[in-house]
Image (cartoon, rainbow, N blue to C red):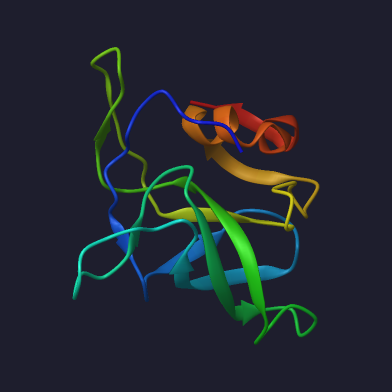
Amino acid sequence: MKAISTSATKALPVGAELLCADNTGAKIIKIISVMGYKGKRKTKPAAGVASQISVKVIKGDEKVRHEVHRAVIIRQRKEYRRADGMRVSFSDNAAVLVNDKGDARGTLIKGPVARESVERFSTIGKISKQVV
């Protein structure tokens, strides 16, 4: 996992439901925790684009449901600013399931992927069709 060039706004708190954009069988996932989050007392942990999170599958295949998985956020609806001054936002919140090393578990990603998540996790960029 590498550092990214921008600090995206952390817009997805614990408990947020996301769309799973890969072909692992999961449809809707829920954030349980944010990996590497260090925050203040009584502050809810939040994640943004290219954050690694721990999730529970709510809707999807029986093989992946009701289990805890790791995921990487590839799109967020909240606008964030890149280092070159451009502002980026997507139409939905989406994530991709990954293994413990950060390699994508699926073989195909539906929809666009943020450049920040491809910078940090290069295997996501290999299976994505469109990087924005």
